[in-house]
Image (cartoon, rainbow, N blue to C red):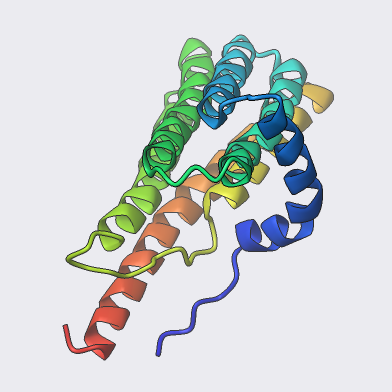
Length: 210
């Protein structure tokens, strides 16, 4: 059987599960729909992207940081409300892709405005890799495939963490260097993770004779 290592997302989920569940129970009692939380999280990411595109990296980083708890809270509220529908999962995944696109598009715009076509290309490579990581998992989860491809060095949590760190660092240091380093790491890491997941799916299918 192919080994399924824990990701950073898994470890953070285990660490934050208890306090998150308490907030979720309170939100459920107040009648706050989990889809509203999902949408609110995307709206905050859009605001963060606006500031990032303008080069206001500290403000953008802070707003992005504040949006992160909402990304986990919506699912916890759905469980607290005992909502068994799957649309919320589809909506959450869809809006996550929009959120990824907003941040990397904002960085692409910032570098394009600065005439840095090299960094624009790297940001787009990071965006392509990020989307491929999610796409391979979605295709592998299809009933015809039936493989849970959540493995990888650069899952969404790792990618968001890198973006958050380098965006804030760029603002604090008044330097583009952290962004340049971070985007190169993401461009390489995300695309390697996509290949890592593809290999995991291939190995799993081979081992079970498919």
